[in-house]
Length: 61
Image 1 (tube, rainbow, N blue to C red):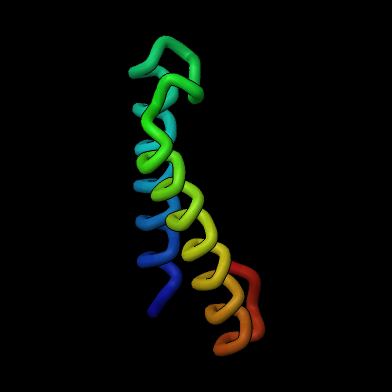
Image 2 (image 1 turned 60 degrees about the vertical axis):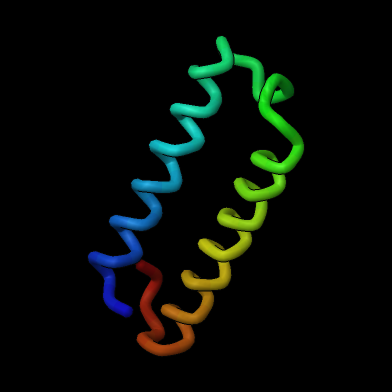
């Protein structure tokens, strides 16, 4: 895992949330519960990856 991978996956996550939010007319509650759960799991995974990156390199991002 390197810095560019973290940047790419964070950007991909942000774009996905942006598309979901504006695809429903600015209402996140219009998305199915399963999709909202997947977004929460992806966010948690993102945080875990950042924690692991910090443990390996002792640098923030």
